[in-house]
Image (cartoon, rainbow, N blue to C red; front, side, top):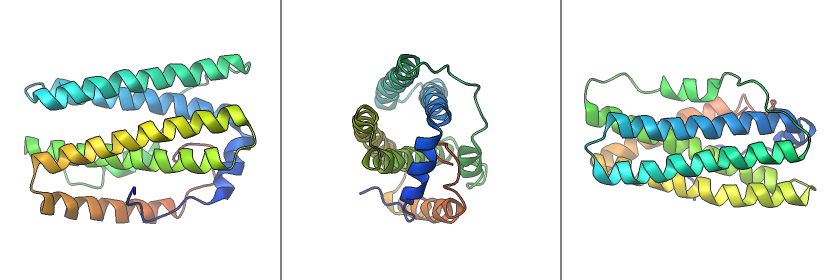
Length: 193
């Protein structure tokens, strides 16, 4: 369903379970970044009414997810740690060449956001299915559904702003790049680590 070309090993879930505070901290900050990205799209493409409406919804939902992760941490006696660098997103953002064309830049941004959401969805699924902790398992299963919806929203908008053949070619190249990148990951208690 997600079109990813690399599946996360269940060993990553074990690493995440053993470093719960780290994974929850990483997750919380990723939700903030997702909200910020949606707000930034609104700021930069404010004339696109339908896009603005949907990005507003996503920004609100992502901040709600941040709040949920933070409250879960507090409930378990944890303190939100410091934000750490997200080299996954940075590497994805460098995949496309910079362009002066606003539409092309928007499509690239939407595709990267779609892929980040797809990978998050996949990681949440692996985590939820390999978790003895029933509360966390349900928590991540519920979030997985939301991430899948965000993934389809971003991809649909990309296909709306540019010819689908062109968008799908860009998408397939990005997904292939990400799959190669993911082969060297899975050893850190980070959502994309």
